[in-house]
Every structure is written in structure tokens, then in C-alpha cells.
Length: 197
Image (cartoon, rainbow, N blue to C red; front, side):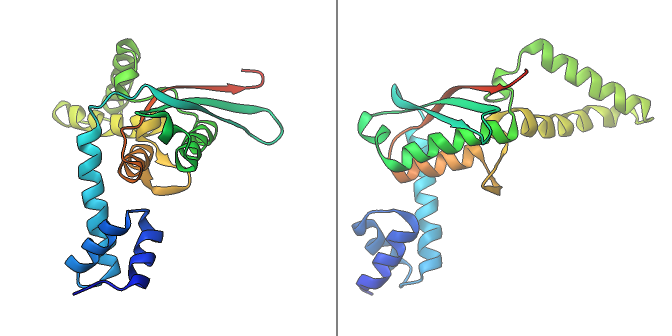
């Protein structure tokens, strides 16, 4: 079945995919827009996974100063080429990430960046809390792991729910942008400033 121009335009507007890719996916899904969007997302995430190993040395510094100039954030976001770094989508991503840092106050980029002593201290405190609550030792280890996941979602930027859509994480948003822009994207570092702290 051949895809109509209107459906191709609709799919392209919804996903940002290329015209030929939209036509191909619409033909595969017999013109079903919802199935086509889902298929494009799956393919985009697969492509994003392939791009993860590529070097990303270009990019921009995203910044955001909250109203009243009491809180601000700066985020370094890298990509593979300066062409992508100059696109409005990439610049919006960098700004959104800076807004995320202001709003959600992460302390670390990912769980790999948490110092070992901080992590051990947190595990110990969680285990002690569970012992105080009378939980048996065989349950404590699994319960600590579950609570650590919750802790990562609070303090690690990439694990946090995205402030614009709590159904996805910051990592998911970055992966979606990798699929859309066709290049590896890496958040290198961030800083959050707050007056008086």
C-alpha cells in the first residue's frame, strides 16, 4: 500500500523522521500512524544504541537562570559535529537539561559518579534503618538494593524523571534525541548554583 502525502506529513511532524523513512514505515504498517510512530521509535532507539560508542567532542554549554536570579545551572552537552550542536533541537535539549538541574537538584551525573565512600555510607544507613525496623537479614540486602534505585533517581541526573514528562527519564530523553538527530549525545558535566549555598 502506498502512503498518502498527508499521512507522511503527519508522521514526519510527529516524529521528525525523514520523508523516505516515513513513507517506508507507513507502507509497512498499512498506513496506521500509531503503529508507524511505535516502529520509528523502536528503530530510532536501536540506532541510538549503535551510536553510543561514537566520540562526541563538539557541543554547547546549556544554561538556565530561574526567575529572580536566585538559582542557575550550566550543563555541558556534547555531540559528534558542530552542525548538530547548532540545531534548535540540540540547543533546546541543552536548555532543558539545565532547567532539569535547577528544578530537580541532582548531585551526580550517574550512579557511576557517586563516590564509593558516599555509596557505602548510604548502603550502611539504609541497612541499619531496616534492621531497626526488625527486618530479617535475608530481606535486608534486596530491600537495600531497591532503596538504592530510588536514591539514584533522586540524586543522579540521568536516572531522574524528566521535569517536562515524569513518565520518562532524562536518559530516555537523551536517547530520543540521539535517534532524532542521528548523532551520539553525551552530558559531560553540570553545575548548579544557588544564592547562599
